[in-house]
Image (tube, rainbow, N blue to C red; front, top):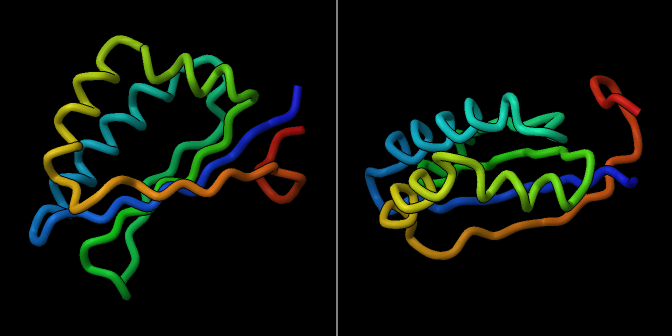
Length: 103
């Protein structure tokens, strides 16, 4: 199976970035033991005060899809949605190699 990766950009409502980061870090804890999750990193950027990026690598798209139905996932999604200024933007990736990528 081919690995799949995502860069997901979340734009928080004004003043809600830290609350969103907290929820996404809870999601990272859930994915720690999720089958197929190889990387889930929550990132902020000094150039955009209201933006949070999540970097993900999964063994397969099916593993990623299954993780969205894991216990607690829907609850965290429900908590995050009201904090967003708009829908997340996702860039799909095909990881090909590099430091830290298990092949």
